[in-house]
Every structure is written in structure tokens, then in C-alpha cells.
Image 1 (cartoon, rainbow, N blue to C red):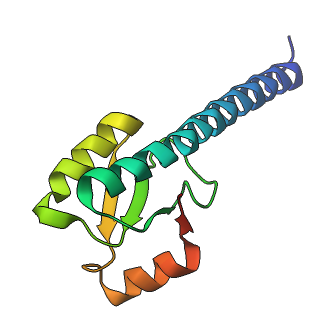
Image 2: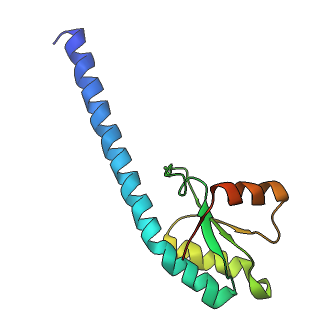
Image 3: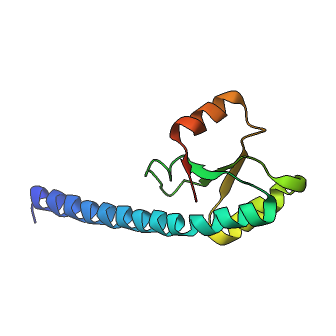
Length: 120
């Protein structure tokens, strides 16, 4: 087998692996999005949030192997922030970055307002 043929086979195998990787990530992002209404319901019911949404890679359709799930809420009642994060991690099966808008720096709030997507 000559060098050109080997290179072509390598490139074809790489493209196939990359397509498979992207497909798996898209499927995982879709699974996470399907779980978001339940996550929002729990945050409202158990932790007093009235506004819940996502931002970051999942909101931008850029979720990848290194992504966590970025969720914002208007507030968490009763100082139960870590309990809320724990419930979300268990439900979603991913690391979660939970941001309380009332406690977030102004620059982060502006970013969330520009990019965020409320979950109902």
C-alpha cells in the first residue's frame, strides 16, 4: 500500500470517528435538554426559584466532552444552594454550574441576560 492510500484511509477513519463523536455529543445534549423541564420544576418546587434557565455551551449548541451544564436561577431559598446543585447533578448526570442571579456579578448577569434561555 502506497503512502497516499494509507493517508486517505487514515483521513477517512478520522472523519468517521469525528462524525461519531459529534453525533454522540448531539445526542447527549438532546438528552440534557429533555431533562431541563424536570430540573426547573425541582428548582421551583424544592428551592423556591421562580426563574430558571440555561446559558453556556448547552444554550449555544456547543456542548462537548469538557462541558458542564450552566443553569441560572433568580434565587435559592433557605441557603440550600449545595443541595440544589447535588439534586441537579444527580438528575442530569453531569457537573452543574448553578448561578444565583441575585448573587452574581453584574458582568455575569449581563452575559446571562444576553445569552441565556429560560426553561419552563
